[in-house]
Image (cartoon, helix red, strand yellow):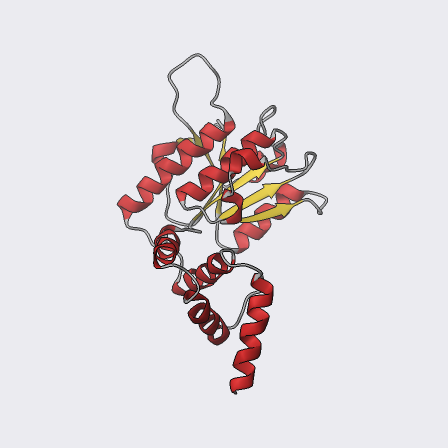
Length: 232
């Protein structure tokens, strides 16, 4: 669904609000108030659909609105049985058309003010609890077999390591993502950083959620805009 100017968006939101049960509307508001783009997730070249799908579900539950998917060699597939509809509620951006998709993704994130943090052991790494959150953060996770590519490792701004006390070298990648998101979300709340969406972003998302909850949203919008035009 396309984005609308503020006046049109407000009109549509008011009209569609009347079609949604109060309990549902309250849930939309509750979720939107917990959404963030201060923290975002990047996954590179996943090839097992259940891992990527588990991360989608985790992102949605943790309030992460944007997921960035790099497809250098492996096309990203969603396992509907695992996401159980969670992919409907977040924004997924795919990078698969550039010569170097990882670099393309990183450049676009930096333009939006993100620090690129590779989740991989490195000589300059820090423990997860010590990761600075003084600016917007993009966490990057590599694929299940080889981890992050050299492009990702060589172009990251920082590196973070998840603590472990066992013999096994690393966590499953979807578990790593869940651990990182939980830890960082808790830290953001404690630090009182401005992690929430802006009022405009909240309104845009609220309209998006509302439209996803009604039948034939495109037809509905067309009809509502026509009614509005006729009243002018």
